[in-house]
Amino acid sequence: MRKKLVAGNWKSNGLLADARSLAQALADGSWSQAVDVAVFPPYVHLAATQAILESSPVILGAQDISPFWVGAFTGEINGAMLADLGCHYVLVGHSERRSLCGDDDDALSRKIERTLSSGLAPILCVGETLEEREGGRARDVVLGQLDSVWKRMDHAAGPQLTIAYEPVWAIGTGHSASPGEAEEVHRWIRTWLVGQMAAAGEATRILYGGSVNGGNAAELFRCQNIDGALVGGASLKIEDFLEIYRHAANSRNK
Ligand code: PGA
Image (cartoon, rainbow, N blue to C red; front, side, top):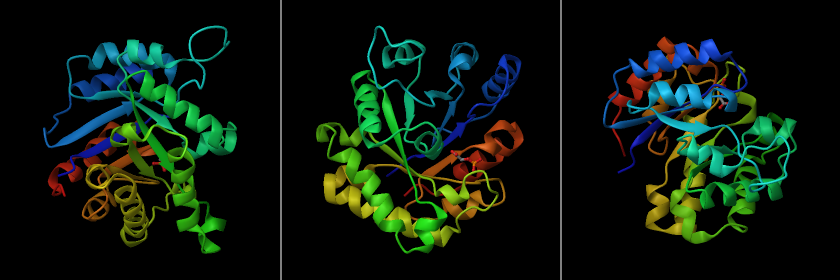
């Protein structure tokens, strides 16, 4: 049985006071044991968020990780630092990082390796652009992104992966994939995971991300292979985030 995960990616939003008040609202939230919850604050707000969430069930994650290790890498935040701050998850390969920050296959593989060797759990984000979807290439693109990381990583660590399917055309646009569109891709990913890892691929969580909100979450969570959500915009408004979480808590784990 896969436990759902609802994860809030705050992206590059909010000043320290905003992070503190969001974290406090999360610390005051009521959380079910049946569904995990996680937040991904900007690096500079990780410590303050961690201090507030320390004794709550809300899990902390980082939005990125350095592909380098400790040392003379000016401006980089490495895995040891993230683990020390109490992070559990790291987002790797978010489409904004792929398209705006030059994270290519090689960098992503190094980030996955650094995440794992720091004792952290990677959430690998994959997804096609609108052009790729309209050209009938969504399946090839998504499975190609998975393959390119998989062939460079230690397969023994495969069970530590979480996958987030985030169609680029749905991120921040207000146009979520329909449950049918999302589930179709999640099934492709599930089949791929089972092909690589057998039973562990069945147990791997596949999150959906892209304009998830309180209005569409319930339907998405009913799909057989949607094991939670990676939420951007709606994670910045506590009521919206809690509503999404409630829908996850009310849905059956599969
Ligand atoms: P969105 O972002 O919910 O604002 O579409 C999702 C994401 O990028 O993780």
